[in-house]
Image (tube, rainbow, N blue to C red; front, top):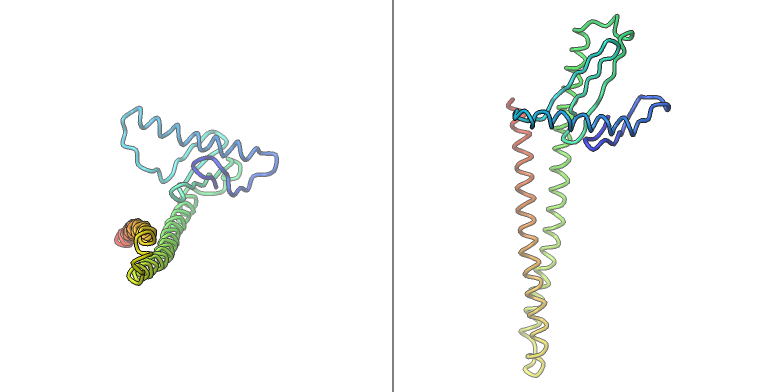
Length: 191
């Protein structure tokens, strides 16, 4: 299994294979295929599987996630007894597992974003409490300390209010991302 940038994160190859180089070349191959599509002005959708067959070896590359892939290598001698229908059945099962894995990844991403929203909301609440504290402090100041000290307090309030506006935007953006991820999951359930 390898990422789009070429890092191999799981392999069954023996030590004598240069696994990092293999991953780089597989990723480079995927980029060359994308370039062929661009040069030909073909619509470039994410691939689901790529199959390469030579006399002795068959290679099947399947898309796992947004940035991950799996390359399956079959030697001809190993597949003499395996019928094509069983290979298709295995591929179908792998694709089903991949789809389940994608949904699980999306759900984990939603949970992480919801946790991020909660942390930002806690920080926002803390900053809003600080604003209230400084506003009370500003009201309770004596006239003698009011002019110099009030400028500092007002500056702190303005800074906190700016922080709050930014945090509220962050919360809105993350909630929008969560909604988008939920829509993807719902769309997959309908299909």
